[in-house]
Length: 211
Image (cartoon, rainbow, N blue to C red):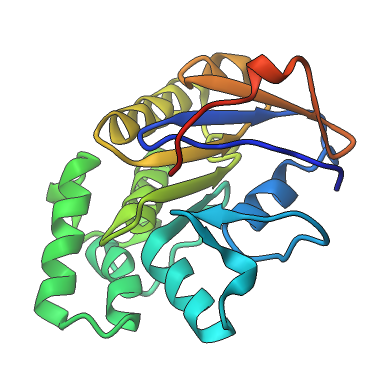
């Protein structure tokens, strides 16, 4: 992937657009510490991810960065509350605290009354909202969403983007990879990738501050 320079402000919602193979998913993987860059730096909260030991990096991913995928990645044998609380339970948060935090997160995405329902009993939009709740539950400050509306109809997709907008207005930072220009319109700015490099003027992709 070619050089990409960007800074994401706290509370900012940024869209990444570009053709298939342009590097959108790679950019999110680097930002989420799932891949290591061959050159340059990736900083989250001012911390250079390459400087961290594997165990510390795993802790940072679990506690600071949340990911949302097009296919939801929910566990069918767990209900909504259990799916959302799972990352906290894996981080050894006491069960009652993890479940309470999950219920609060589900309430923020408008699904507090469906906490006991299983993924197969929910609509695609409801499952995606559960996946988003799981992605920001706890102390997460950065959310990375790879085509989160791709499997949804247009109306439900707009609801998901509105939810992400509300979460960022409340202080979360997020990067969304999308092919949909109307969904990108919910974002503070749009980054265009082509062949692994940013296209367009630097003013269209730069911002001060940090997430």
